[in-house]
Image (cartoon, rainbow, N blue to C red):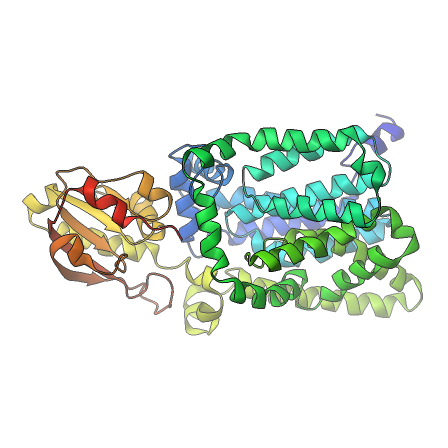
Length: 496
């Protein structure tokens, strides 16, 4: 292969950048099984085992990929965390590529990759949620747009459309990126792009690929709009968390790199071709603030600012005292990466984690602990039922985080149902299942509307005293249905 062909190949990435990405993926996989599943991860698996073009709380891509991962690699936290780790590794590479296409040197590309690898992308890569593919889609689209704004073949807009369409089948927060880019192009007066038929073709392709989920949403009463309204109910809290999350995600110590990147792309003369993407990020964040969305909805735009900031850092290093400055930057990288890992990854032994203040401040990690104990507790309650009641029993849970581990990790249990989110569509229980083992808080709170009598049979205890979503919750046994399941089921529905 000639040097020219090698340079034309889109993945002509410096080996140090690939090494940084590889080390990040290796660390994520090494820690992937340290604690256990997160409740959301098991829910995605269960949703994927009920294939559909959509669910009440998300499009279908992540659930389908999660179920496929378990089908291929088995039921384990590591199995479903392979793809998220690889996706975040690819984001590191893409940040390096963006720096290259901004005109950055090989050192700037390496600086960009390192900055991304010790940022919030590291923490995101530990869990299997819709966020990881969303971050990857944002980074890929931004890289493609950076190339297009610099004069790449306009047919590359078709790749933008395909990426956006697939991304929208994962999470509709990509609409914030689309709206931000549209605003950025207008504010930067990139009328060449606005008039481009290829750019409009990209929009058409994205809508075409998104159409199956849109049709499903329409046929099911647009439940994701209901979900969005629930989230908007926490708008004040969401807005208050925006700046702290930006600071943490960009890196507790390295965030000045992203800040310098914003300044460079918005003000530097040689950054003029990419002004539109520089404006797109703040525009997307502004839209999230206005709509009251969750603070991470537009966090994917940080990739551009990390890449731009690496060029500023590279030039700073070149102005003299390179060794001293390099040592300072290295210390910042180590400290920032260590803090991100400490706050987001299971780097501590679980007993040490339990004895610290982290479970109260890092709920995601806390919610990875205790699922085997929950399953064992419910199995014990079921085993204690008289044989005739056990044959007529059904398990009803307060939310999907309780239902999913009982199905995936339980043994010999009655059928499991819940009225929470997508689970509601998979019910109601069979009419002959009239003895109920209820797990978790009651929702609705008045159980007497549904059953003649209930009594507490056990309490869930993870054995470590870790305060999480299930610790201390009750397992109850209820008898005497006040109406048929089919009659009661609509009142048991919850979307949250």
